[in-house]
Length: 506
Ligand SMILES: [Zn+2]
Image (cartoon, rainbow, N blue to C red):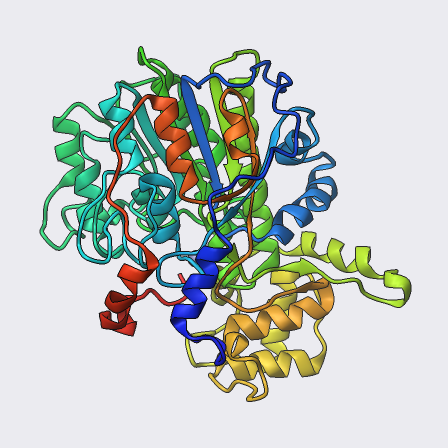
């Protein structure tokens, strides 16, 4: 990671902590009022649904509203929740112990353990001490516990609530740690459970089944009426496909459930216990679309996340025992809609072009004839392929630049963050759809949070992300406290870790 030259790493860490003091700001909403779900102030929830749009900069939630109106002629669930009197509005400071900019491992750990760690670690402090994540504490308190995501189920954000590993890449180990400790697992990443794909050759799917889990691998099973006691559902070898691809590919649509469908399946299974539940729901591919500067993909995945928010709110509605928290773990690439034209009069036309895209950058090579890595197709064929993908007629000079980028020949004057194929694509398509990007990596933005239900008032105002641990342990009645490490103690250890141990742009 590169830092601005005038601040030392230590100064930056201290600055991060200085801006992240434990929140003492008063709630900016009237937390004493009953909220939309009819719950009140000061009581603890029986059920907690913690919803994460991963890597969601504030511009994403802003743009999702007009995008939902454009492609669905309806408002977003999150937007409607934000406008509901009595809900709690908050922000998280998301710095990690090693950087002002967190990765998803450190961010999820902060929520789940109450302590900040170095980027890349999951519930392990820089000196090797392990912490007990909130999912395990919830189980110890008799709650049921579930993880639902569009990423590999072993990816950093779900893993942070349930696993303990020094390096997030140890996904085979994370999969093993879920066995028996998580009641509902729905997402992608079957390669970390499959005997033919795991390095140790263990058939984890069989091991889960032997311990009583039902195994699902099709969308029909998720949408069926069966409500097993415990379920492992894996619907793709890797991350689930982007929503924009899912909705435009009948084979994917047949095989892979949506985040909302998985959430709808998870809730009754978790609610069948006697003592309530903790569920984390992650719209994980919002982050990946942000890394890719792929504006259409990010908005379609944000809407898929929003559909899941709708399912959670529907569950909570009419009952007074369920807390729903909707948030993100960090910003990413800071997409935002820039005004275009005289008096910004072309802005809306630009934005509406986003609805024409039918494929993510991830699948772009599939629609470009003869496009292989480092091998650019002829310009006319490339222009036709791009037009099919994005519904845009690009200028010849734009096509020429993309052709060069495909061949690995990137313009030298670009910002380093954009000095790659997706950076070039994002900049060029931004000339047409109005969406600008600061880079292709995570950002330091405050994380927008909305909460409703009993205990929601704990999320109002500005908080360190670690404060979530206090709120959830209080809610589940756990007095467990994990070890912690100050920035001062961590500083000498930070100098010892090789730069390669820190994930790059994840
Ligand atoms: Zn990321």
